[in-house]
Amino acid sequence: MCAAGIATEIARRGQPHGCGLGKTRWVVERTISWLHNFRRLRIRFERLAFIHEAFLRIACCIICWRLLRKSFC
Image (cartoon, rainbow, N blue to C red; front, side, top):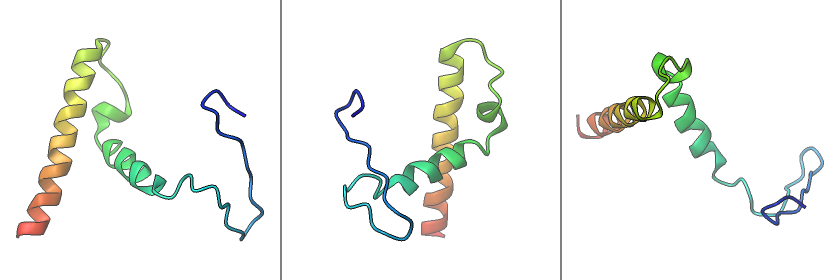
């Protein structure tokens, strides 16, 4: 049992795990991989956290803009 109170369960290969966790994990993994396409976020050059956060927000805006552009054009 970890600090969050979630018991560790490892399912056998090919069997559903049944605990309900991780059903939408691919959304998070996909988003992180999109953010890693931006070099300044993949290799952190900035020492100050607010500058890094600003680049993170810009990257999120660019990602959203690209998705919206695809859906409307």
